[in-house]
Structure formats: structure tokens, C-alpha cells
Length: 257
Image 1 (cartoon, rainbow, N blue to C red):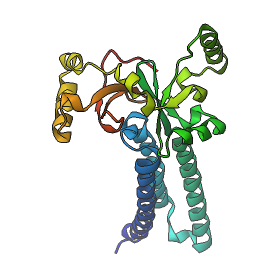
Image 2: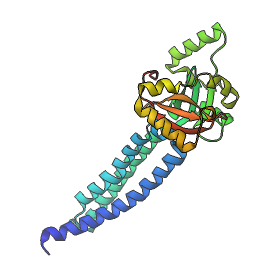
Image 3: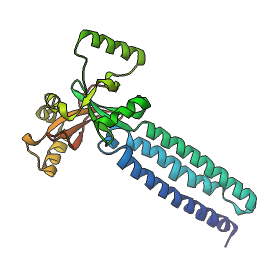
Image 4: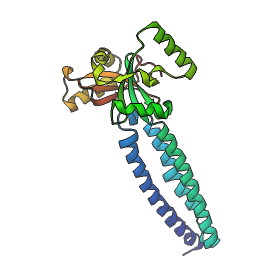
């Protein structure tokens, strides 16, 4: 065995062990993202993939690579142990930072405002506002309906709050109303899928595939746009308001957030 091979084998072993533990951590975080923080369709719409890439880069790429670079038994046990502790500490710190960022951007509400849904993230609401969401549902993100102020004074107050707080009105939780009690109003703004299909063949094919998979007829569902930071989609709802599926929606009737 030559010197290069002698030094390379322990490095590969150390990096492999580090990679194995990193994979375990990553899979755990992936489960949390998909089931608790970013359940579909919000994983796609709200940047779940972007957050996942951030966590993966720190956890399963940088950590093992650095371990491979620094692991050298010729340093002596004490120096090697110190290097490993420093690397693990830095990786954990970076991972915690990444998880905090992903957690802060998690969707906690899908709020219907005017003629479409908007995703509201945890970073957009105060802890007190977040606490009020539990009255609209126990599964997050909760589905809510935002009531437009009915009079001129209310609209003027809304505009003042928008300017002062620099926030969109659909983030004002005092405007929120129960989602299912307002389904009739929401249905009036359903998307004309014939028009959409005329302008976008890919969306038309995705829509027809979803209808076939769910065995849905025209009378069984309606479609509403959902606007999010990273990706716009069309959500397909049954007449009780449950989400049946979604379609990617890069088409022009969408408003920019």
C-alpha cells in the first residue's frame, strides 16, 4: 500500500461516516418539511425546494467534503479531535441557521383576497397574529377568507395600514373570516379553465390528467389561483373546499405579489 492510498482510505472512511449521519439528519428534516412545514401543494408554491437545497448544501455536501479535506491521522489525536469538533460545530451552526430561515418562510395561511388565494408566511405575521390562526383550523397552512372593509372609512384605514406597515391587506388577520363559510363567494371567482387551456397546452394536459386521476367531472370541482413567493399554481378544490390537487400556473392572468 503506497503512502497516498494509506492517507486516502481513513479520509474516505471519515467522510463516509459523516455523510451517513448527514443523510439521517437530512431525511428527518425532509420529513418535517413535507409533512409539517410545507405540505403540498405549498412545498412547490412556497419555496420548499429552495429551502431543501439550502439544507442539503450545508448538511450533506459541505460537511462531508470538509471532513475529507481535514481528516489526517498524522496530525495526532488531539489536533485531529479539535479539527473535527470545530467542523461539526460550524456545520451544526450553519444547519441551524438554514433551518431557522426555512422555518421562518414556512406557509401558515392560504388566504383568499379579492379573487385568488395568497400564501402568508410565518415571517409576515407577528406571534400574536399567528396565534389567532388556530381559530380557523388546526392544520397548517390554514385556509382563510379575508373580508374587504365594507365602507369607505374602513378602506381608508386599510390603505393607511398598508402604507405604514408596508404589508399586503391579506396579511391583516383581523380581516380574516372562516374559509368554508365563504365558499360560495370564493366559487364566484373560479378560473375559466377553457380559457386557460386555450393559452397553455401544458396546463391543459396537466389539468386533464388530474381530472382523470381524481375521476372528476366539471360539476365536482372548481379552480382558483394561488399566488406565492416562488411559484404560482392553480388549486383544484371540491365543493366542500378541500384541495384535490394543483397545476403549475405560469399564465398571464396571474397578479404579481
